[in-house]
Length: 166
Image (cartoon, rainbow, N blue to C red; front, side, top):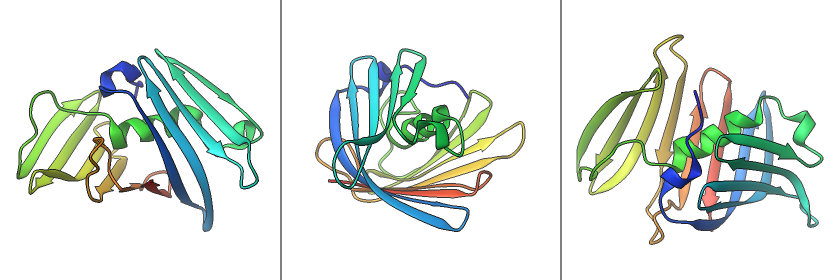
């Protein structure tokens, strides 16, 4: 699945986040900063005592990964940025429904959203090629267009991300 240009996400933002990653029976918790400015998106995994463990940058369609954790990622940095886009980038054009379900075929995947009381509750991605499934559950909406919490479960790769935006 190709990455979208960051400019498609709409307005610029800078969010401080707490991330809990569950993978292969282990859990890691760390802070991160996610920034989107124009056609550039940067995700920085912060070390507990300051500094960065990992910096992922998407500019246009070019991905750069650097920092002490860059070489030890269990999967491509592109997947992490794709997860960010799946969580926070719009998928559908036009206004969102206040209630209901909508589905679209996009880039070899079937994307489904469930809406209730005017907010996004669940978004899921099903690969039409191999039936890989990713599910995202959304917490309360924030004034800046984000969500207080997001839980992404990638069933095929066996990991779960819980993201809390402060």
